[in-house]
Amino acid sequence: MMLRLAFSSVILLAWDVAAGVAARPSAGVTRSSGSHESPRTRQVAGTYPITGVQQSGIQPRLELRRLQEDFPDTFNLYLLGLQKFQQVDQSDPLSWYGIAGIHGRPYIGWDGVGAGPGLPGSPGFCHHVSNLLLSWHRPFLALYEQVLFLHIQDAANEFPEGELRQRYTAAASTWRIPYWDWAAPPQNGQGVYPDILGAPTVKVTTPTGEAEIDNPLYSYKFHPVSVEDFYWQPFTSWPETLRSPDSQNISRSTLVASQLDNNRPSFMSRLYNLLTTYDNFTQFETYARQDPNSPNADSLESIHDAIHGITGGNGHMSYLDYSAFDPLFMLHHAMVDRVFAVWQALHPDSYVEPMISVEQTYTTSVNSLLDGDTPLQPFHSDGSGTTWTSNAVRSIDTLGYTYPELANNADQSSIREAVNALYAGGQTSRKVSSFSRLQSAADADSSLPDDQYHAYTANINSRKFAFKGSYAIYVFLGNVTSENAAEWPLASNLVGTQGVFTGMTMPVAASSNKMSSDGTQDSSDAAGGSVTVTGTVPLTDALLKHVKSGDLASLKEADVRAFLRKNLQWRIGKYDGTAITDTSAADLSITIISAEVQPAKAADQFPTRSNFAVLDAQEA
Image (tube, rainbow, N blue to C red):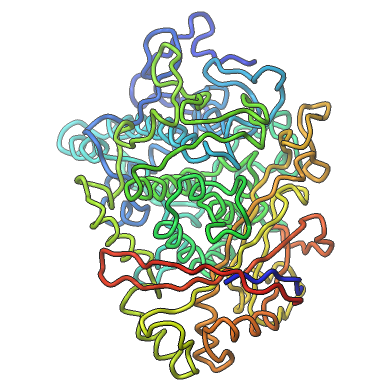
């Protein structure tokens, strides 16, 4: 489709039925049903203290592939610990099911924290479209990390006493949850989607020898799946988490991998722009209340949404209600937290700012004032009911972990160098000459110095709850040759994807206080239809290819304006491959922003952008 463009340069958690006491079982206890008991650390009544993993001091969370390749013993224990974790009875609050259920469904309380006043039946505890998005997920990850760590310790202690057990307990001691880097160029010809994530089974070393087990990174198998808890079809009938499921309810790993590979360059450019250009935390973090005409209309939340949608493909990851049950969720959110932590290190003086909430959560009503001292419910820091806050989790050291780029008290210069090495791509100083040569050969813009160039970004604005559930906006340069929506994410002329991540149901949003009989609203009729979200699709690299091929005269604004009027196209689709033909509900607008870029002069410097401009409004 062509578009009129504005071009611009109370359910309480019971630890024990009687006393609320959580006692740790002996290591390695396995139930005949195949279940595994949840390890407990709290020995007295009270709230469950979330501390992260404090053993062995502050240790780095590693990229998944590095953990697998460079630390095979630790990775082996990670798989064994995941297997144990996923086998814990689902009624246990510290089970995989119990912890994942904090995020969305089944919409119940946790650790003594029930629904807020007048909010029974509301969606989960998680904050989205919010200034608490990143800080809320930080103790959520820490809870998962510390519980899984205990299962990993159990797995290590099951190996025979002596040298072998010592080897594995040492490997376990420094484990922290890995992250999956979905933006950096993969090494050694690999795809961005690690092979281990798409394998239904995996070989592990157990105390009795080699074994092949169901891969706990591939899916979580419900035992059982609850119709009452999950409510919506087909989630009530799927026995395990699925990614881009086919008609036989099998995850299509190859399809997920191909779509991610096609979108990865866009994700890398967006991430690099966030880390190098955005100085305000709120703008960096969330698309809540963003100005679509701003040069900073992107956010980490927006990129996060697109990853959810592509990996889920209408499976669990693509819907807020169910996403946390997929093992991929924590790998993805560890990456999000890493980007958050790196940005913090580069901008230590900007953090959570007061904001009025635009969406309801399980405990927070619409139009609540949220700030750095707002309780991040239901997460407690001790056994006495103290709740974590954004200010309390500002430093990741508090929770016992770091990331490779931040380890050993890395200074900002070394962090910038690491960011450039991973994500700069075509924006590094060594690429400046290619821009200059191409522009000069095609009558480059003489108003810019030779070492500068124009960069272009498509700012996308739409209503979050325009359609029932999550959806994607696909941006192309050139004709869309197929009207089959399932082919759009794989198109060779796809420039990028703006994903919109929602639930099957939604909370009351700022425009209404109405609720349906079960306390939720169908997204298609949601009062929150006025909630808008923004994101970006960087265009410069794609435009440069057209300069190289001769289709585009130069990167001068006049040339680019004419080229985009003719060639920029878009489509909206659901993640199940359904095309949305009536797109009016989205109230979609696309604004093209231009900027003058001064590339970095050294490996530890970032490029600078200036003279942002909104190109003249034109009929596409």
